[in-house]
Amino acid sequence: MKILTSLIIIFICHASIAVGQQADMDNIIRALEQDPPEKFEAVMKAFIERAQAGDAEGMISLSSHVTIAKIGMNKLRAHYQKDTIPVLKACTEISYGGNNIHVGGEQFGTGAGWVFEKSCLVKDGKDLSLRFIVLKENGRIALTSFGLAD
Image (cartoon, rainbow, N blue to C red; front, side, top):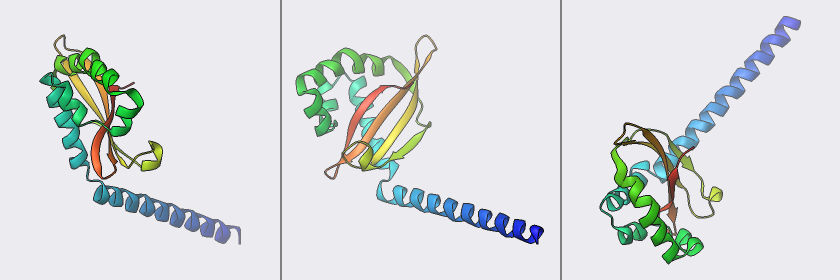
């Protein structure tokens, strides 16, 4: 009887794990269909291109309205010119692989989107880890945050 009970418990555990894994897979597929990462990554790449061209206004045009409202247009422009543009101009190469993490709208208070973690190679051969958060905001895909990753 103990063996039969143990086998039933093992079967139930395996079945529960399989159901949980299927639910996770369903969530991943739904995220990829609703928020294709390519669309969000295109905004990230455009932001990088504008930064490397020294175009702070172009960077602002790709930025989240919530971010602009929180920081203020003048402070954001100054931050891009003083910090973001020099960092991204220093990158001789940016990996477009890396971690891509889907986030739900409840995590940032806007819409769902993607966190992209990229590696930037600079002239002295060092790697910098970069993090871009690109979210859907009122139907528009926008860069919400950029910075050095931990």
